[in-house]
Length: 192
Image 1 (cartoon, rainbow, N blue to C red):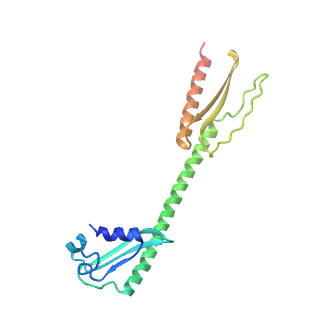
Image 2: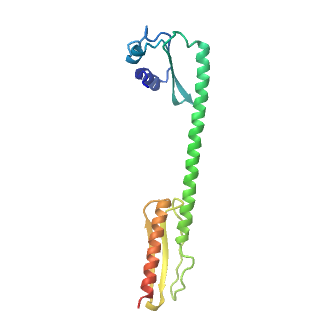
Image 3: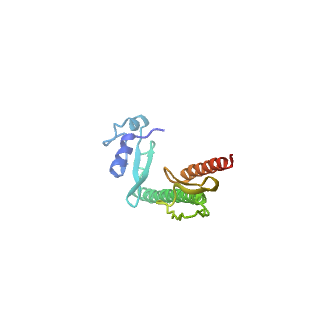
């Protein structure tokens, strides 16, 4: 359903409340097309705020009687609007917390994948000493390292991978790259 856009936008922009006792008969908004068309008599439009931040707008109208928004009713509506603002803020915080918990779970899964890609043992290679320390910059990424020693071919392969990005997606790309490399080296190592 339509609303008087000029009034709602004014309240949204200024944060001021508008209370009209006879909207279609007098005042600066009496020429508003919605008010004329619907013969709105009483109108209330107030900002819904919490800690100085706008949460929405409460709009009420009555096209049967003038002066229905008495000071007592306005006070009650403002209390209800304040309670609505608190409820909206609580809902927003709950959604944010659930989103954060989901993201933390995803990061934890990505870390498990990522650390599973690191070699469990460093190959014992004569005359070569190998050491590394892995500390991801943002807790998780798509990086991994592996060291392969092909004894019969007297080759050492050091493979370092840095997948762009962070999170579960990057960790999965790194996992696929690591598995592909393992498969290739096993096939190559077994071939005559």
